[in-house]
Length: 147
Image (cartoon, rainbow, N blue to C red; front, side, top):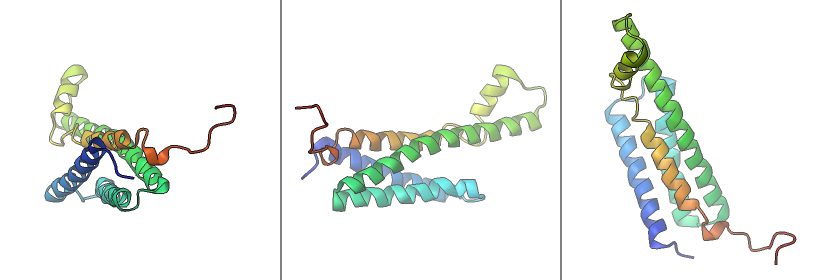
């Protein structure tokens, strides 16, 4: 079974996005600590899962892909929180009088791009859109009580 053109485009965007994010994180040397390795490892898994979907097109490959995409959404949110918290700590250390909206504004625009991990969540959402009502995931047996 071949995917619709829209599904093909979504999968291509996921692959391009994952490879692009991997390259960007490598160029930024985003591997100083264990937590910085997490998005790199996850992006390698994203590429692997996408290749599995392209080559096998089985329900289990699609379920694995869907789980990886959900993990991307969660990891992106956690990354935003971690980046923001790091920026808050830095800004308070730099200027202890910062608080409230001024602290928020400085932290959100801080040295570490606070919203950058959101790109991982966006990638995950694209992947979940790819799997939404995917023909390979449809059950062929009716649920009890349905015609």
